[in-house]
Length: 174
Image (cartoon, rainbow, N blue to C red; front, side, top):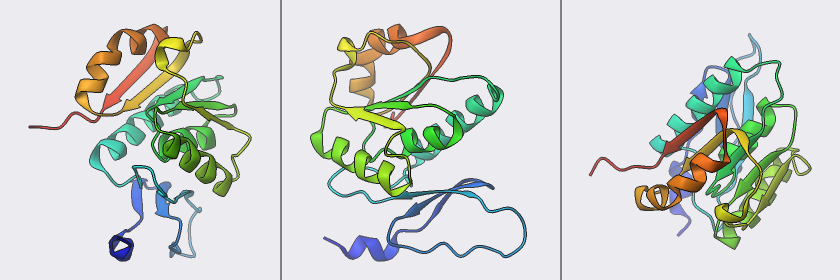
């Protein structure tokens, strides 16, 4: 059950952003600026940050946040898993980030990983159903399976501000 850890590797989102398994050290070149490092321990939840849909979501999030640099941006990660998207967002914006998941193990993993990255006070996570969330957000990210995305479509649109961005991923090619 633990052998897979030997094969986990850092996942470079961009040349200045990397997701690193919490038990590994990241070898960096001594020249140039240090990248933003997000350390993730999956625990009992899904997501080390190395799945292609997560990587694509992170790249889209980064592009959106770069386009909105200098502005306050409200972000929610729907179906947060281990919190990799919410934690990355909290590192890139200067405000709290919301994260939700139906699994209590995901909430626990996200809390643990937010603390591990020094963001325990900047990532708000719980099991609140999306239908019960009244707030709206500049950026909504949902990296979950297609049937769930379809069932949440109305609420995903509702919590996305009129000038906001909705990033959905997790749809398998099959």
